[in-house]
Length: 133
Image (spheres, rainbow, N blue to C red):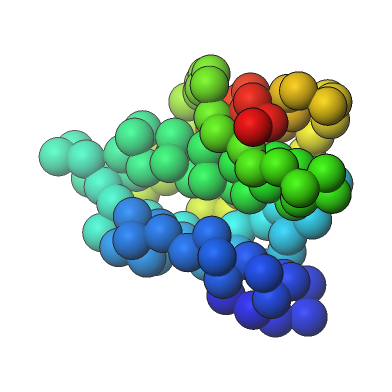
C-alpha cells in the first residue's frame, strides 16, 4: 500500500476484506483519500457492481481519512454511521473513490465519498461519520 502519496503507517490499516475485493489506495491524508476497486469480482447476480461493494469502498476510504485525522491526537477512528446513494450502475472496469472531509472535529469526523467509473461518471455518493476514540 505504501507509495509517495500513501504514508508508511498506512500498512497498519491493511484489511483482508479490502485485499479480497482488490481495493488499492493511491492517496491517503486527512484531507483526501483516493482508492480504486475493480468491478470484476465485486458484481451482484445481474452483472452490476454490488451496492455492498460500493459501501465497503466508501467506508474504507472515509475511515482511513478519519484515522489520518485522529492520529494527530493519538486517537483512532471507528465508523458509526454510513449512508450511500447508488446513482448509476457499473458493469466493468475499475471504479475510483475520493473521500473528502465535511467535518474534522475532536470527537467525530464526517466524510463524503464520491465513486466514479472510468468515464468519470458518478456511480455512487456516500457519507460516513466516524467517532474518534
